[in-house]
Image (tube, rainbow, N blue to C red; front, side):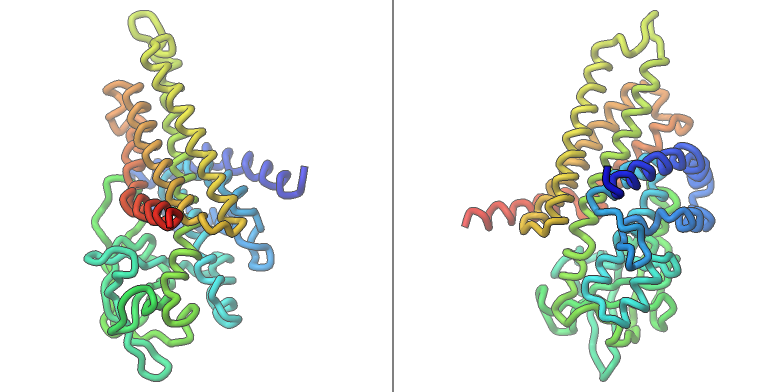
Length: 381
């Protein structure tokens, strides 16, 4: 057994114990208060869970991405806000580091990995989506950009230290005019509004951001003008889509666990539900569905690690497959509980609500199909 295998095995046991112990206590508190307490992030940071995937020379634990996903699956069995904190912290450093110069590495990457600063990924716009049609724009005067525009659905965008904002040079069109900027949360000219409460994923703050000629030093730009979407897509979105696919696997695993436990204990007409073929077959289908999605996700992860040219499309395949799997699994798991599963007193109710959010995170199913179709037609040429 290699040192990595040994460490991952140790972490799997440690994280599963935390998820089933303190994690459940935090889940109950978050559902009750609709807020993730500050001590949750502090505890996750203290335990080292927010720097699992970063390289050791960054201050991380150096767990390879495909092995980190084994741990991400476990966190995804916990409350959605727990999973989201771990997911963002273990991924956003990639988007910054791949284009960061030495000073930016010192100022942004190392503190983010250490948990000293929180960075929110700010791509999505309310009217123009998440790609080359960005309308947030900058004009330049000497060593300063002036940023104007609007963002929404920005996870952890209310309570953060910096936003990683994607915009374009005013007057440009397409990918070549895009820029990636690290914008200080306290910059003048920014209006931050907390978005309304969500159906699920309670406790994770989401922000609506309005920028009105916000000054941003040119030294806070990652890469060159025209590389903004390269920062967003290659550095964060591709591995993040793979990670979200694994979060679907973890959440489905939790739903299946709840359904199996209920079926073992529930007796109808003198027989446990496990003796009912309709229920047994539904849960058997779930088990096959979960494992298929898990293996596709791990394959996509390994291809991304190897720098394979089709990794972006594989990431979209994994997320599309895992999201659709999660929909089927949670629906069958809730059905196995009968009517009582629809009540908030049943743990499956929260899982069912949280599952629906995965259809939007890191791009809708329709976006994933667009990426996959593009790859298919390019190969055909």
